[in-house]
Image (tube, rainbow, N blue to C red; front, side):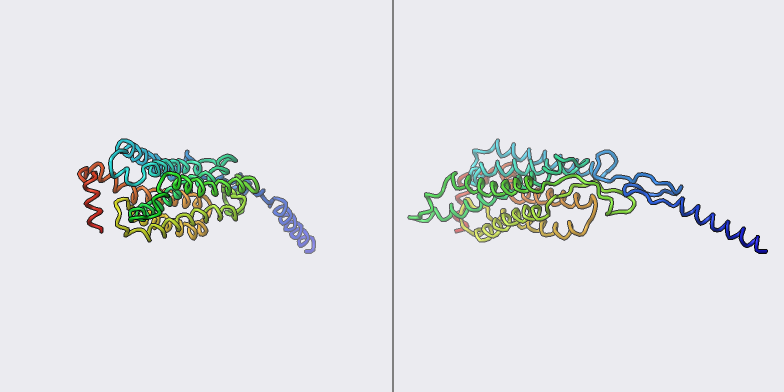
Length: 321
């Protein structure tokens, strides 16, 4: 009787020890499968090979780039017409080229993260989009100054010229360049494999290095957009043939709305969805600027050429007075 009890106790003890020995903890980059074996966790990122979302984003980005290039070609071809000349064609060219480069920046967010792409994706977009917003701000300031200069004996006439707009674009863009240099020299972004976010997969992502620097970069762009919106809103009803402040007001309203919605969306999603949210914000704000500022001019140039004349602009000016 006792012998049978000790035999059963020995068998249970052996099975317990065997199970304890066979239960091994997998490494942080591994995951147990159904065969009780440790296998590597799948690595997830926005891959060009097996992710239809990346293909869709790439096609939309190329289409937007081609559309912006077409708009730039139209503005160059009709650069001597009154509608194009009335709204500072140089700033329009700078703005269109900046938007084209903003669309190209989307490709830095796609594919396997590397040290180069991680360092360039945020800083390059921040600088390029700051140039775009600075151009819009310069256009808005010129609208206000052009109206003030039409008054008899106005001292604003001496400020009308290319130097003011160039200084605005250069100074506002230079501050963003300086912020980006400080960020890259102190705590640059780098690629990392995040195995703590999900248990069954690894997220290959870009660590921003310094969230403070990333927040300052976005905050500065938001500040430029807010200032442009306020100035354009105040100048929206100025009776002047140079006035495109209403279009700028709507475009900055779209930009501000997109990036205000971006903040909670970016904080609430995880993994590769954070990259998709930022890509959506980049493309939406760029398309908003194109739609509000440039499409109305292209409509007049291509569809209503009778409005693209000095007499039509003068008539419109008298009607607003």
